[in-house]
Length: 175
Image (tube, rainbow, N blue to C red; front, side, top):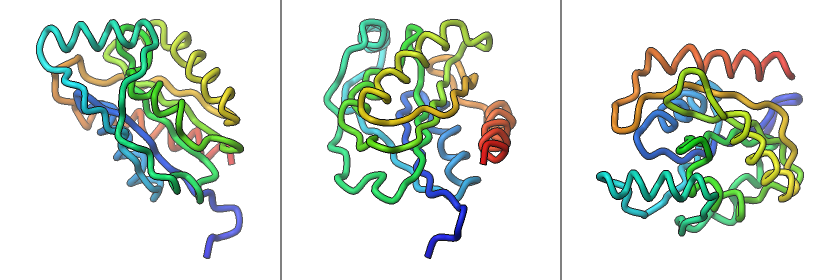
């Protein structure tokens, strides 16, 4: 039975190089929430894959993703959406997820992850995500921008951990 005032949270994420996945898994573990990894079978390795990925993101393309379980987020009051930014826009798998995810009446927190520590253009990407979420009946409450590793580099948990702690502290303060 759910405790009064306790929120049911779902962390949904897509990761290609691991930074977004590392942050999402830390968040889910520390919050004790469910986690859902968005699956994109598109080949993205090598120079051609990297260029295709950036093009698809920049032009807000969609890709075929694994089917979303019909009961996903049924029990969740809140969804924490962790989205990698490529070419200053969300990865195509995130766009596809938002087209089909059950967001009606859900509170959503956007968490973008990008290699640029200055978070250049993250506001543009977050605004785009916010408009997609709201068009599907969700309500965006918080927006966070995290710094991950450069493409192709292994994420450093010690770099990600304090950023995740800041997200958790901000969420806790908002309750």
